Amino acid sequence: MSLRIATGTDGAVKERKGLKRKFKAYAGLAFGLILIAGLFAGCGKKDTPDADVDLSIFAAKSLNGVMDEICAAYTKAHPNVNFQNNYDSSGTLMAQIKEGAKCNIFFSAGVAQMDELQNGYDGGSVVDGTRVDLLNNQVCLVTYKNSGTAVTGFADISKAKNMALADGTVPVGQYTRAALVNSKMVEGDASKPQAISDSDISKALDGLEINSCANVGAVASAVAEGANEIGTVYYSDTFGYENQLDIIEKLPNSLTGDVIYPIAALKGDTTTSDELEAAKEFIAYLQTDEAMSVFEKYHFSVNK
Image 1 (cartoon, one colour):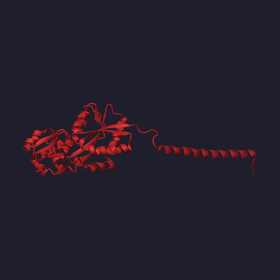
Image 2: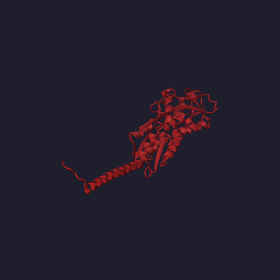
Image 3: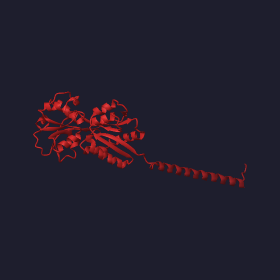
Image 4: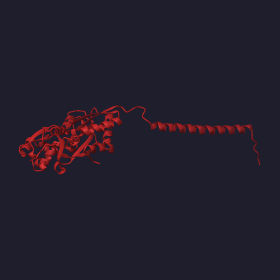
């Protein structure tokens, strides 16, 4: 049997091994702390704020009030996003876009205008995958408070002295013309309502005086102010006019067709990647419960 004799060298070796083990332990701990610190830093704010983005939104006149409210709320939460909103009839807005006006988001009161842009136009296009048929609305026949009108429904609008009616390029004017044809009150093609003139309507309705309006907002104002006895607007347009307008009848979709509001992002030669990304994010936000509740407050119904 051999006998191992401890020497001073063995003690030094043991001490060095102990120091190595301690160094490895401390090094591992330090690495772990650095890794954890990095993870926490990654969960914090960005080192640099998001760049400012200006979004140009072309929206139907009937969306004026609700979009102003939603955009203001969105900017509070996203201060880098600035909105430049243009409200008019969907037909006018479509024409402006096709003529080269810069637009990041188009929010139409009719599918025909969006379809036409989606078919292609010079200098721009609808961004694939961004179109959403977001809202529904309803056409209403209205009169001003205490008007004393003899009109009790859409079928007897000829009893009025005059009527405010959006022209044939405006979606609400097209929906009204389709309803007149489908009700057998006016001759024409309900699928081509823009071809039905004011004079055609006036002749068919015993000479009813027609005040042709450039958009639905002009119709609502003309009736609310008493300039015209009756008019057709969207249900959403009666919001804020509760003390000035009375709804005579809500027209069924069987007469007007579905009143759908599509929205989509657009891009042109000068559209930046930041603008496109911001437009997509905003359209996504409009589909959240938070935004939907605001639309519903303004009498829109939401496609979910």
